[in-house]
Length: 355
Image (cartoon, rainbow, N blue to C red):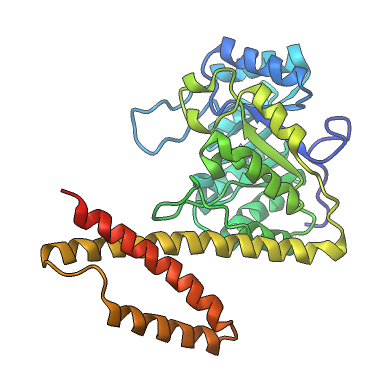
């Protein structure tokens, strides 16, 4: 894909990052226009809003449909912004092209389905539509790059990827785990492909948008797609992860845009690897404390003492020996194990003392 062309001309956004912002869903004409006017006043060049919303269960709000395209057309005429929406079927593509939509994106569920991707590639073929492809729901780089290749083979050259993270089992701070190593691998394979970060879907909470946007910039991403709503607390979908236009401005103003030079790329990759390992450590510690609480319940049922000294000494010696064999400092490992053991005891005491 070394003949890809820019998503938009330089006049749209002259500096990194390209910012695409707007509500998760187009709900009413008033909501769309109010949000768009505020974003345009703050210098946002591309307005996004979903008019067709893929929902996990029937009965949820699934978008206003084609009438939302008319609202996006009004945004385009009144503000001068480019407008974008999600497409998932051949019919969506036809309606978006007819309505003069400037950019479309393809959602994670659709990316994961090669049959759906081929249908969209065939429908988009022959147009010069910029297309953004979100990562699939599973952390599969081949599936992601394969979706992009289908579009490329259909003649599309204005392509980009959106990294929105991956759902995982268990409790994590994020709606979708960032797993930065996946987009890093995509960039290694397709170095000319622009990548945008989606901190809204990664975090699932508006208070995480800023930090995740900064991490995307630190990794050299080309842009951001962020959900922004004039009254996010009243949003019909994904209200917790949307920010107001003024909050978005604060997030963007706080970003540090570093020049990721060739000499610094390896450091950025290694830091991303550290971040991923740290996230895994937090998840593993959570799992360990879950087991500790189960042990606390067992001890309570069997009238056992919380502190099992012999067991603790055995654990400390065995884990410290293993750490030392791996080249780590024994005292370092013992100090970590003591802290973990103290928290495990505290967790068990909560269970036993609970009436």
